[in-house]
Image (cartoon, rainbow, N blue to C red; front, side, top):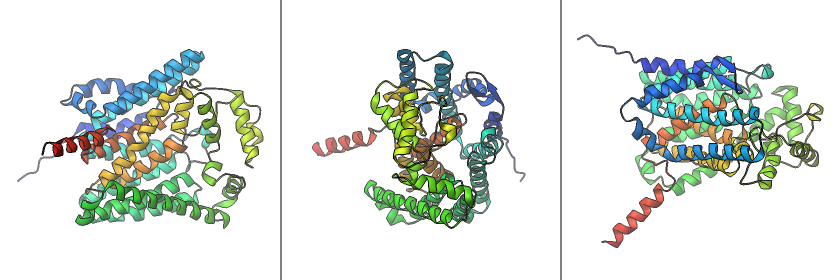
Length: 429
């Protein structure tokens, strides 16, 4: 009997679509060809069966995203932001939302779409390192390229050889060691923690008794263990730097960031200290898109001096944005409370997705484990700029699908409703 092979054009498109971000236009900031393709693609996806029902599944995310955009518009009108700034701010949120909707209507229809998109995203990351980061490629692009392509190849290999999936944690640890030697410490820490998560995701579903007993309380206990793992990763990095394994540049940077009165994670993200102050000064109404304020720039330098952190001479006297180095703090500073609420909500999604992952065998477990940890790091410690909106849209789509596939609602109040329903049922007994 002859086997019929059916080609899926959507699969090829899932690979090619993220590659289109390599074509960049300077219009209202940095605009990708991928952004321009999203609108006609959305129109096409809306014609597919079940499109409206699929969008209803993620209505809390979309509602909070709309609230973020509304908060940004209101803030810019109140603050009198200049058109060059508010157009870039509004476009950034709008195109992020557009990509999120497109990917949600598309990728969850087949696991193969997630794999193809991850491979395309990784290749695009390799070739899209900004010019200002030449010499630091492994920290600003090639790290993600290596990770996404490696995970995609691993998952494809497991289709023919299922037992290869158990090499996932070893692959993560090997990649994290390589990235550590490239002084890409964020990527090292993210992969190191993801390796531990993947071990749990591979073993727990195979132990029926433990899978049945996995409760939210047990999961919280495991999260505490994850914090200890993160502390261990930081210790390993410190030892490697102090022993000179990562070179003089890494040693000097580590010494500068740990010589003050703040821990390493804040020494490397000192902008957070100023972001918090800017939020406290105006918690509801933000400071506007691409907010600039010499007061906070001066405060940033003063705080670095106060806590014993170095102030580069090149930083002095420049007209700079209010310092932020976080999706959460950046949105809250610029758009006010509405921006903060969106990212606070997003922070809950990786945890719920991982809880769902631990309860079942999943082909995409390596990709889910990495994206969950990476999203948590990005929301707290990375700026939301340029291609970052594409990575986050993909990560959110994957994790939201993981929650839905695991029977978990994206709506925060779903557990409360279930508890109330059980109480009503008992009351009628």
